[in-house]
Image (tube, rainbow, N blue to C red):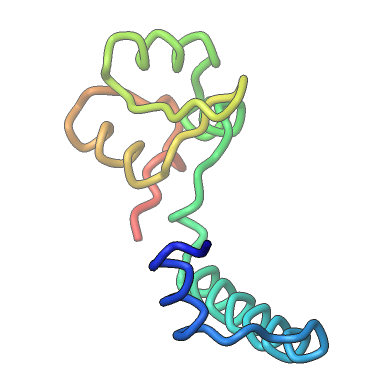
Amino acid sequence: MKSTNSVQTELLVPRLEEAELDPLIIIVKKVIKDTLRIELASLTQTDLPISQKETAKLLGVSEQTLITWRKQNLLIGHPIGKRVYYYPEEINEAIKNGNVRPKTKKACHTK
């Protein structure tokens, strides 16, 4: 005996044969790809996180200094797996707030 929900579902969503699903799957994949392409295109280079090593080089400090600043909540780091990344916008904010002092002039790269 079928439950009321499954009977209602069968009435609302007709069963499609595999051959009928193929064009639908192709359309859904295309919509997803197009949506992702638009989203990625809207990101600028400064929106993307940079590695701890790149951040240290950018600021002219050691990676250990970055770790210390992060532990002291002076700079926000984003752990992803075993690595830590930093967003340029957050680096610039920490510099503006006086939380961190870069040793290089190229450190502050505002939009």
